[in-house]
Image 1 (spheres, one colour):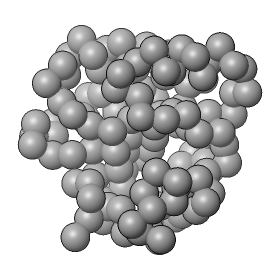
Image 2 (cartoon, one colour):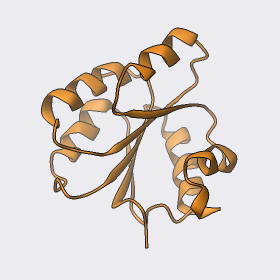
Image 3 (tube, one colour):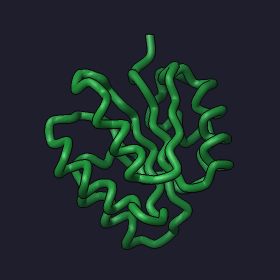
Length: 128
């Protein structure tokens, strides 16, 4: 049984999404993995998910149009009742980005790209 009803990969780099989708597909954390090239696209799709569905979101910070921080603000505004798990997945090595992420209760962690099985196992050890 999967822990999440779906995984949302929110990153403007389609290559990162492809690699991460294959990597996460090996874990069994969820059978359904969806890719989004922008924050607004992911928010629109999230609005179609039943409240009871548990979604794992890997969120990039640096994206055009709606960046990761704007995504988080819109998520909080439009989905205050959701209890999804959000992990920041970014190439940023800026300490201020980590601090800012920690300021959001809904953010469960901050991972540096590239995503690896070792990094995933730190958050989901029962799958390894």
